[in-house]
Length: 113
Length: 112
Image 1 (cartoon, helix red, strand yellow):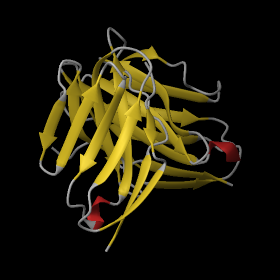
Image 2 (tube, one colour):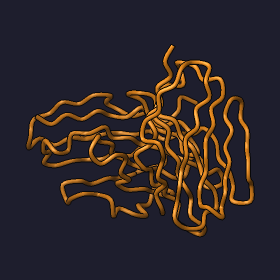
Image 3 (cartoon, helix red, strand yellow):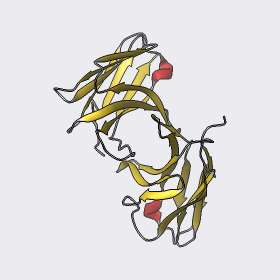
């Protein structure tokens, strides 16, 4: 298995633009998590899905952030409009119900200028 | 979910030495997991210890758990430069939802 695949690896965008981050979880995994990592705030859980259904989105910072999981093999995290303070590394992770460990993707480094 | 607190925040050792990192948490757990993050990469699951276990080994890793003190430690023996990374603990609360919350981690630097 290729692991959790995130794209793009790097994204530089201008303030006010829409940004879409993508994630392909490991096949068969039924949980998907989106995290954001910054030096100031560490790793923050934004939202997670179980069987494509959002379970807890309490970590989503603002209405500018939205996440979808249209099927078991794809999820998106969208920021519209983006702001410089959204600059961070965004990670996607997936896991199986009966196996507690997470598998993380390599992350998307987002820079909003 | 609850967040573990790793200690120390940073640790610098010579290659070949042992490295010990500690984790404290607040409420009862089902299990506790340790993860490693190399610079610029995602977290990698290292080892899990269940609440009814006191010690677990995996290669050069040794994890202990003391539920009475609500603490865990991760020992890396005979460290290598490649062990340089941040290490995070993630306690999984009993009966809680699925999510894990991560602390600030311990930044380990192994000097050649």
